[in-house]
Amino acid sequence: MVTGIGLFSGGLDSILAIKVLQEQDINIIAVTFVTPFFGSEKAEKASAYLDIDHRIIDITEIHLKMLQNPKHGYGKQLNPCIDCHAMMFRQAGKIMEQEGADFLFSGEVLGERPMSQNKKSLKLVSEESGYADVIIRPLSAKLLPETQPERDGKVDREQLLSISGRSRKPQIKLAKRFGITDYDQPAGGCLLTDKEYIRRLKELKDHNLIVKPRDAHLLNVGRHFRLADGNKIIVGRDQADNENIMEMANDSDVIMRVRDYPSPVTLIPYGGTINDINTAASICVRYSDAPGGEEVLVRYKNGGKTEEIEASAYPDERLEKIRI
Ligand code: SF4
Image 1 (spheres, protein in one colour):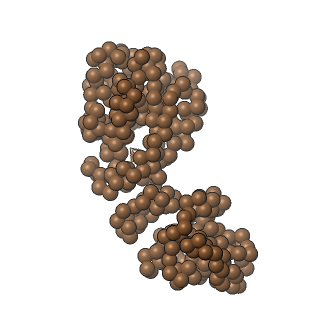
Image 2 (cartoon, protein in one colour):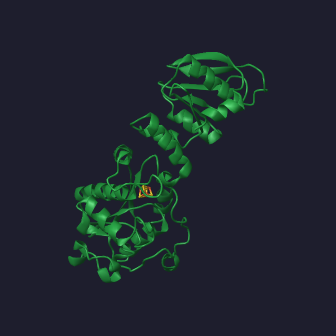
Image 3 (cartoon, protein in one colour):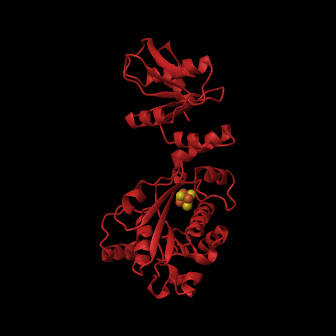
């Protein structure tokens, strides 16, 4: 049986690419790559109703390394789309070799994204991946050069499509034909195109030459403040933030909450001085339900030891000066 390994985001284009190939009785292994910048939620939801072998693979380490200095630069924001896609195909290519599969594919549509999905970019991505002649884009294949699996008769080029451009009409029509009604809107989802996230990421890069995976995850959680000594304070904005911060915290951090009133979880990643702890406690009180102007007890954990400190709310005008 012919097997194709597909990059699978769970968006409509990637679902349709699978459907088009399944019409040729091709066996599908769909791969979703995750990093702190994009996850697998959409793909997990979509794979539940597709008859596929779905694999989720974390490429955080190599993606962060690439992000430091992408060979083909960034898109409009901090999105290194050419290098990112090439990396994904390269990783998928390794799975193809391990599985003895026949080709790679994606739901990319020629011209859908002017910068990263024009003919030149698609060719560049294919070449950079090292698997140029076995990458098929089923939705636009007839507008692109023939590939080895098509020449070998493993994939029937006649049954592939010639969709191009930014209009979604052909995809919506195709979705109807396949009876697909439950799909997400395209684009979005990558934090490397999110201005707020990028601002924080750039600020972090200015302080830490190497961005660690946990730091990249923390950037998407809570309010962030930078202290004069370079240390950082992160304060949860809601229950979900508090839970996420708790989950990511470890023994190298200082983590605190107001003892007797509801308050956000407040974190000093990798710990801090006693001055930092005092400031973090005041900020924690500022966002708590403690009565204004009162000194209250803040309980914190530092290097496995639990202690308490008195603090009153940090003044708003000073807070704005250290907000990232
Ligand atoms: S938008 Fe994000 S996930 Fe998509 S190719 Fe670009 S960098 Fe990669």
